[in-house]
Image (cartoon, rainbow, N blue to C red; front, side, top):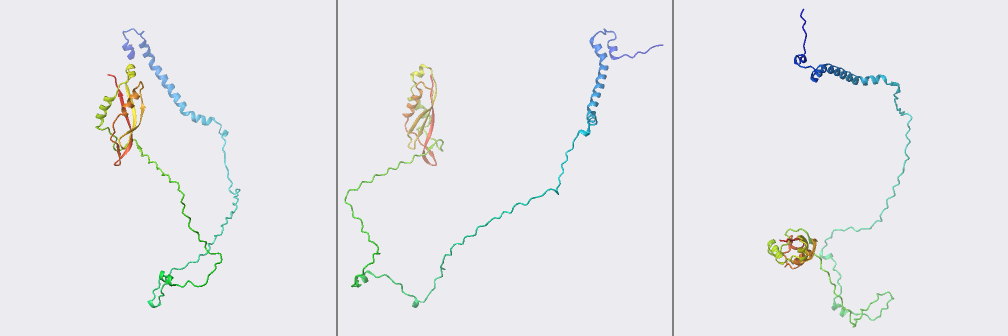
Length: 272
């Protein structure tokens, strides 16, 4: 009787080979290991799903306390608020003021109109009789004050009050900035011509920029010249000297009039 033996893929692959290889053993144990892992995973999943149900049955329901709040509306009594009487002060009556009604003018005929009483003229006063009796006063007449006598002493000359002129506003940015005569090219040529490199800066091999600030007045003159940021070694003093020697600038304009403007100018010191 012939016996039929079912061979697996591993048996067919390793039929004429050495089965001592580790891969053959791993393939032999793979299927049983996979089956055990699936069974354990399904079991853990079922336990996790049924855990809340089991916990609800195991926990004593009598341990839970229910808090009930009862409100008896019948026992609640509302105390009336005390009545507060607001006293309104009486309104003071203002005293009555007698008024006169302005009536419209009534037109009368010329015969009924009385002529107005005019004061006497100078001629009538000259011809008037002053009377022959002296009328004595009762002491209540108005006192006639004589005009003060003119003093002949020299008076102190009045000192003239000098009013200080109002200082013009100082602008930082204007519609038309101040300009050196001839433009920036002429300004660069003036600085290059008049600037002298300090010997101390040459010995120290110092170069850089000195930022100078000054005010351009309405007449173009430069005032309040100062160093904003210097580099030292005599360069700051030299930059101030050159700025003070500049001619008058073209003043800045704001709303069609000349104004005082603060201007910042960098002066470069470069060793060739």
